[in-house]
Image: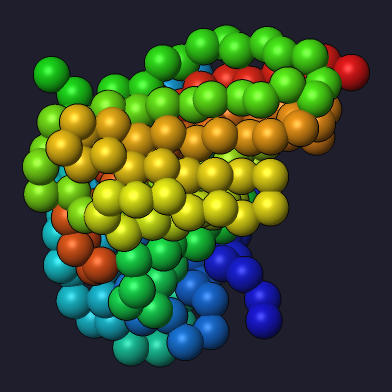
Length: 112
Length: 111
């Protein structure tokens, strides 16, 4: 059973471009969470989604950031018009609805 | 005040030592408590999960939860150099709600 798959592992974008991060949850998992981690800091919650629904987006910046988890395909975290401050590691976790959540290896976004 | 407080360390111990890692929290609604291990430039790996107060043991790892004191601990017995990592506590109110993390404690086990 493959774990949570995130791609790309590394992404470099110039200021003003769009970044698109993908997350394929573990088989049988319908709950997806996105977190951001800055260097030397803990994980900060961004958004919680179930298939086709956003359940909790209280940690998501109001502008430029969006997330989706369509009926088919991976969950996508989209950052429009990236700025240097968006540089971070973005982690996705999935869960079958039980309390445990399992993380992917992350996407490291660098904005130049 | 942060919902979850965790001493960032760094913590350095000799091989074979017993390690104690701790978190405190302020939200009395938290019911599920987890410990994750994160190696450098990797994703967090779930180590232990407990529900409500009590102890749980898994090999060299023991997790304790004291809800009355809002205090959780992770003990590592016979620590190994391969245990060197950042340890993150995490907790949630319900099985489907978001996880709230501590800042992580950086542990180094010296051979």
